[in-house]
Image (cartoon, rainbow, N blue to C red):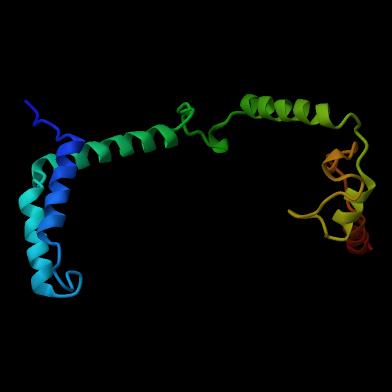
Length: 165
């Protein structure tokens, strides 16, 4: 059975008794001996809480806090496990399917097969790279940003002509 809670009237009565016993003590906030006396009076009047109950209460609070943190930071959606597969393991059919899916996705965004003149210019001048942005609207450019198969750059063409001659 849990111990009975003290009523407010009893607590007020005990507090009044402590004040009465310490009334008239000079320097009760400064002198060490008087502070010890006041402290002992308070201990005699007010019961000392049970340390095992305090420890149990603290553990419950920690568990509740940990549970709340777990609820807040839990993974919203777990990603399905996909077997690790590299492109070296692909056969020609799988590769063609992947390319076709990318082409269909690309064609939804780029309705034309015409190569962007800004893209060609950037490739010729060797400016095309990771941070290059098309001046014709960036991602909204309607032209292709890929070289057609078999395309030879002008700089490569000059090198081929010099080799032949």
